[in-house]
Length: 209
Image (tube, rainbow, N blue to C red; front, side, top):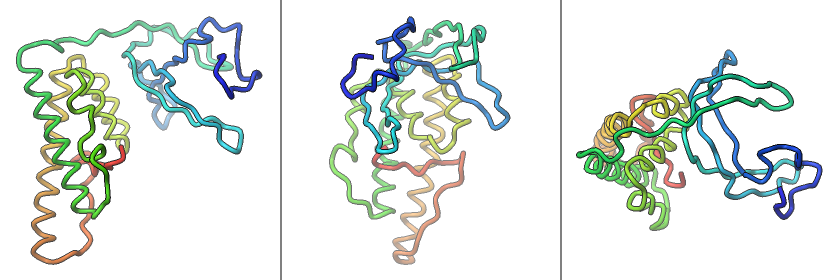
């Protein structure tokens, strides 16, 4: 609330969360079942869309566990508790995070090469790869798997940074192997179209992600 260009009628001044710019999000499957683990999101930017909607950019802030549903309408309100990250500062976690960061760099580079994309330096070398802590990096890397929602949820539910990074290393390693083999095949046979890796076995990483 109080933000420029937000219509007054959209502001719920009586809400105890008014002005926080934060809300919770949980994965919901095709049968309408909501996951017990979700993420608190903070609105960082927004744009008005001509049809009256708002295009909102969010940043994840913390993980929570749903304890109970307080009410369902007009919006879902739940009682939650934050879930602290475990072992983010354990020996070996920083080294593993560096490996995952390099694998993501390799994935982006190979994808750009295979798709003949034109990208800038920031897209080729996202600053997050150097700036984020191991725990923050593990969540940020998971955002690249947006086409496989259940995989993202599984990564979110991991209780430790170490286990999350280990899974991401496995996924990205397989993706790099796929693209490396595809690049070699493309070089041998010419510029024929190369299929994307199968869902769950690798992720075609968009350099704009």
